[in-house]
Length: 125
Image 1 (cartoon, rainbow, N blue to C red):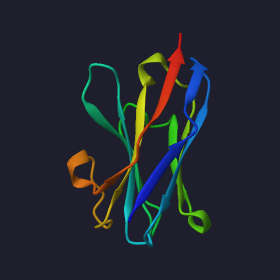
Image 2 (tube, rainbow, N blue to C red):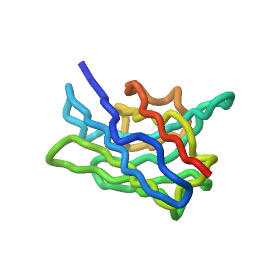
Image 3 (cartoon, rainbow, N blue to C red):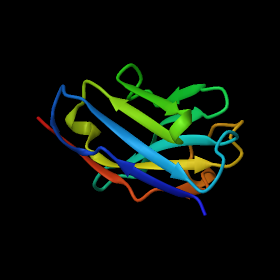
Image 4 (cartoon, rainbow, N blue to C red):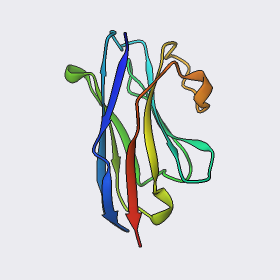
């Protein structure tokens, strides 16, 4: 059974940084794509970033490009989201997701097969 557990959320001032972690277990993830999504209060869930586990190719939403970095730690089955220059509009619950057919990275949430429980990120102005 696949489990995804996020951690690292919290409260930070605008301009600050946070690093989110997603610990994945229950499978060998070398053929997967991993993604980060977020949902702000009153808004739809939106794609943030994704990474192909086997080759490390990354993809970003325009709103976070240049500020956020997604990476993987192969030895620990962990995916990270380094978030710099945070803005109040980045405030949301952030979710980690895993997609079995990982050669095609998806930006739509329904294409992912497994989800974590989410971690809250709050950016104060």
